[in-house]
Length: 466
Length: 62
Image (cartoon, rainbow over all chains, first blue to last red):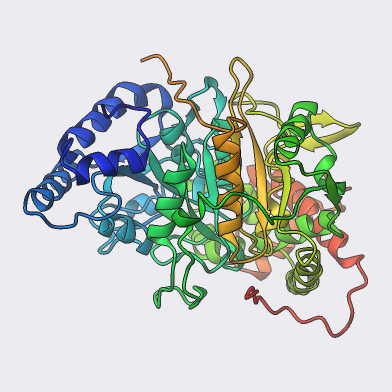
């Protein structure tokens, strides 16, 4: 039975062995989108006819005895920051809606399709990926499937909501400062931000070249690993893509965690959070027997430097549109991008130099430990339209910006991170970050599989009423 | 959030002119506030005594 809760590997196995047809799987997902997305607003485009045609092609390959790929018949969708041939890449904006359709798929989209997955459509996001809430003024807010009055998180909010809401088992998103991990945590799904350079960004509209990452969302670890294995690897279309051959993470899931040194990140990662966010880390640490605490140096400066670099690069990239079409930007992003375009160059260069220093110090820490644990967000999903600021620990912080307080210092230096979900209704979901040294995604998958196997983390399909 | 630097609407207009930007009047106060926050973040970075030999090399190979 292929239903909303079916995982990507289960769907692929059923399609590959002829137990079910890809058309049935895709038609079921399209039906769920038609029913549930009126509430969630995760999709900005649904490719119904193309998806059914692609599914039929998979079924023909199975019938002909050909290999239809490891993700045969698995429905997926991509943040509308990714190029999809024949579709205009909105990037969450009204400005880009005036552009012609893309002529070629983004590499990650093309690789999932080559693996047999079927693209169902494009997903909502914060304009130009510059936000943590997906309260998009042009296309409406995406609602959290666990509680539709709450934010889905961002900027890949449509991706997380589509997976958490059972619309698709896999989705693609991007993460510069937390835009995969934050929505994954708030919606209660697994999200992977791979090592910088591990997955091609070709065909993806940039936010900040220095640390834009592409990665998958799923409701199970095996699905996340299967998607990562399909998209990881060198790509001459992306100048920052590593030429190192990728390790196959699906094969790491049964290796257990013996020999892995696991510790809890202290200091910055234990401050300015709601009690339940820290308790979630404690629960994961206890399940893994992780008693050691490691404090990384100068994490608050790393976050500040990430803010400066993101702003400087985004401000420079959008300067032509800011000069000619400022009124057409989303008010949620326009004033921040205008300010970003005014930053002095010395601030940017200083932040890049600090980044090199910080990367070296964190590399030293990873000689003593394999996986670090930290909260993904400081609190569960805020209400859509929540006040701009919130008081916590005696400080006034930005409600939306503070969602990235624990994710920004990690993507800043390209570390691979999986956000694992803790979903225990009626409480709202929370996420815990599993963090490793560059190119050690396999260690993260080993830990995530152990936690999922023991029932400590997981993403049950608590689906919205239609 | 960091202690904001002092940026006023006149600063914004002057800086914007140097990069060919026109800031909509209704946005000037908000842009000033956001730039102040970014400059405060830059100051947090600037206060750290980096060795002169530290180069901005974006290399992530293990």
